[in-house]
Length: 271
Ligand SMILES: O=C(O)c1cc(=O)[nH]c(=O)n1[C@@H]1O[C@H](COP(=O)(O)O)[C@@H](O)[C@H]1O
Image 1 (cartoon, rainbow, N blue to C red):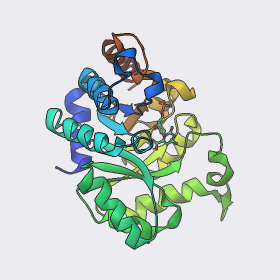
Image 2 (cartoon, rainbow, N blue to C red; image 1 turned 135 degrees about the vertical axis):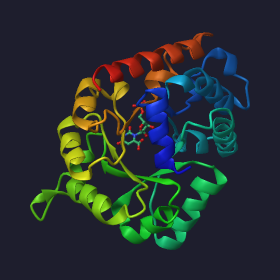
Image 3 (cartoon, protein in one colour; image 1 turned 90 degrees about the vertical axis):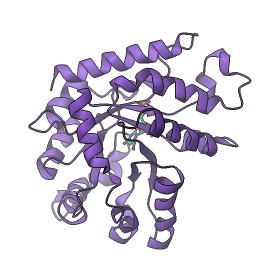
């Protein structure tokens, strides 16, 4: 099944728009993981299994694994675990790739074949040929940065180009020219709800990945009201730290499940 169809099925069947972000930081782990060589995998597996029923997608962030010796092997095991134990939940590998075509081909193999992800986050700055190796894998999703959640998003993304902010050109070009196989999605920060509304107006029903609720201060009501499609879907609203580190005690997995349920419910109130 394609990434987009898997995501749409999950939205419908599990009634959730919550994306659980997997950004494992050993400094924040419960004490039980102190001498555990597989702590990245074991901690994330516990979080995945506890939160799966509330998730429309999982989003592992590659830097949190690649920063550690042996971490990428644990990321590989983690995605294999999700694909095996929770096969209806798509995995978005957050690696924000983008390079000349020949190198991008290797990054596509990394995301889709080595790691087995359903979708990958991509930086569109280098243009169409840098995206083509990913776009050509029509069954997999290409999630392009459009208007990011951080304060520096304004530095380039809001610069006026031919009378319109650059992020609007990105949204329009991807929706009208890069999405011929229907496998594109965009990243829009929860911290920019007005821009989210404009982007939704440009891209129709295209899925949007929305990071920035919780720790970064984005407002759930504004995100859902401004970002949802007419059928009340269209969004993967991500929370990482707010779920992973809901508790550092022995009950961390139950606390993560409670945090995921609460955010799923808060999102559903505004759909
Ligand atoms: O592509 C992303 O996922 C992303 C884009 C963006 O604009 N802002 C952003 O925070 N992210 C990622 O989303 C996650 C947010 O984590 P929390 O702020 O802890 O929920 C991190 O993995 C970030 O790398």
